[in-house]
Amino acid sequence: MSRPVLHIGNKQLSSWSLRPWLALRKAGIAFDEHIIPLDRPQSRAALDAVSPGGTVPVLETGGVAIWDSLAICEWVAERDPSLWPSDPGVRGQARSVTAAMHSGFSALRHACPMDLCRPPAPIALDDAVRKDVAAIQALWAAVKSGDGPFLFGRWSLADAFYTPVAARFHHFAIRLDAPSQAYCDALLADEDYRRWFDAAQREDLLPPGHTHA
Image (cartoon, rainbow, N blue to C red; front, top):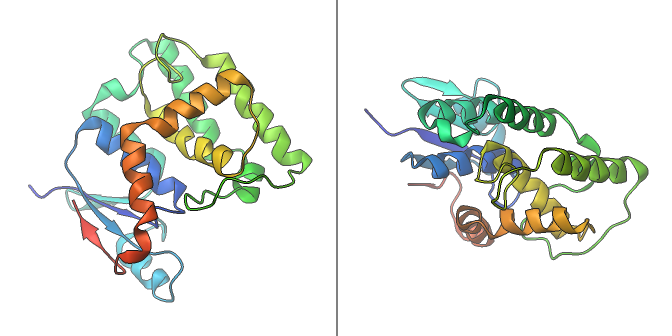
C-alpha cells in the first residue's frame, strides 16, 4: 500500500496545512508531502487537480482525497487515538476548543495572517482583533489541565490548531498574559514545528510542486 500524500501550501503562509502536518508527524505516520505554491498563476489548476474542495491541505490516501484540515486530523487520530485526551470529558473539551479555532477568530486571521518569514513587529489592532486575542486567552485559561506545557498536559490535536495562532502572536508581537505566553513559547519550541519553520525559511529555494518525504 502506497504512503499517504499530504498536499500543502507554502510553509511560510499556509496555517491550515501546518495543522495536519503536525498531526501526522506526532502520530509517526510516514507520508510524502507535495507543496503547491499558492501565489502563482498555475496555483488554481494545481489545486483543482488534487482537491475536490479546491483548497489545501489535502490528504490523498487509499484512492480518496480528504481536503479539510480537521477531517485530516480526525483521520490521523483514528490511527493514533492518543492525539486526543483519554478522558471523555476532557476529550470533549479538546474537540470544542479545536472546533472554535477551526471556525472562529476571523478578525485575528484576517488582520494577522501567518507569515513565518515576517520579522516580529506590532501593528495597530482594531477592537475586533483585540476581542479575538482576549477570547483566545480566556479559552486557554478555561481548559488548561494536566502537568505538561500544552493545553491538556501532553500534546494533542488542540495544540496543532493553536500552533499557527502562537505564530501569529509572535510575528505580530502581540502582548499576552504570562500563562498564554508560556503556552505559545512551548508550541513554538516544539521540535516538529521547528522543522516546519526552518523549511519555511528555505522555501524560496525550492522549485514549484516540490515533493519529498
